[in-house]
Amino acid sequence: MVDSTVLGMQSFPANGQLSAPMIQVQDVIKTFKNAAGEFTVLKGVNLTIRRGQFVSIIGKSGSGKSTLINMVTGIDYPSSGQVIIGETNLYKMNESERSLWRGRNLGIVFQFFQLLPMLTLLENVMLPMDYANMYTFDERKTRAMDLLRLVGLEDYAGKLPLAVSTGQQQSAAIARALANDPPLIVADEPTGNLDSRSAIAIIELFEALVEQGKTIVMVTHDPSLTARTDRTIILSDGELISEAVAQSLPLLSHRQMMDVTKQSQYMVFQPGETIIDCGQHVELFYMIEKGCVDIILSGRGKDARNITATLSPGAFFGEVELLKGGKAIASVRASQDEPVELLALSRGQFLELVKNSALTEDAIGHIVQQRLKENKAGRRPGWLNFGRSKDRKGA
Image 1 (spheres, rainbow, N blue to C red):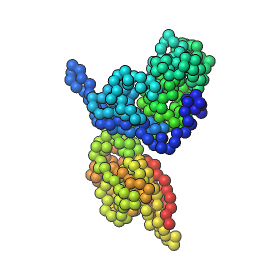
Image 2: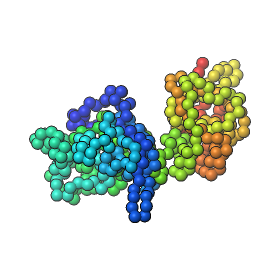
Image 3: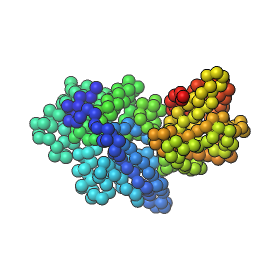
Image 4: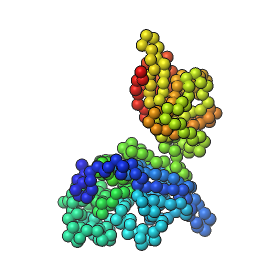
């Protein structure tokens, strides 16, 4: 566990603080110009990341991941749009102001460490404090030692970067990123050059930091790491894939996910509002983006009663009726707590999608058989899906 005394922060921020936005990327476009013309890397990106989240960003090479990170850190600037970190609009400051702000509020962990080779690990960790004029001279050394101890490097404080392993260099880079106790840490492929043991140690450290209230945004190519983050943001050719699509249909290629993102209708239903009536003809495939829906089945036999499964973001429904050509086998309504936001594909779009992805067709086919079996038996439904669900019985 990370020592919150070293970090100079409370162990668990208030709920209101955790739910507030840490990063707001609004309509960001980034275009590069060269002799060959213009090339747009980011195409109107909108993204909100809340305080205390551990978020991974993935995408193929050239998708715009590093450019997006440069927008968030203020290292580069957008052609249009704005980036707000906390309550600070990065691009309403000049470069000097932004540089000083970055030193005091942001920790950056680079893929290739970027430690100064002629400074010891201790001096590398002290450097951001000196640059941002944080802490007294004596406090800087004490704090740097505490941070090196935090990452298990107190015995290597006097060594130069080349005298320690790559895993130790990355740990030192993380200690340096924490030097000024920033609320936000951005890491670009932090485990890309590490062995599996060192990579696991880095991720465990990140998880501990998030538990202490830090917000971490990490670019990675490693799917085993994305499974340990709160959210996974996927970039494809400079655009964001809907998280609901990625969670509901994870076996699609990124290009197919982007096609679904662009084809989908956005729909909102108020708490308790009916989305589908049992027996109704269904023409849409629904993916849950925000909120929850209740699936209500009629029980059979002497213990007849309504049985409800609650599906949460990343789950889907409507596939049984679209693939089997029948009427709705259950009623679906928005849960009572909050409005539900859905993405929907038409019957034709959904059937074309399934036809073009054999893995998705097989997986959804299995789910359809399971749901039909449970509906026929009149049992409490598992309502298996690629997303998350929680079941409960209704009276």
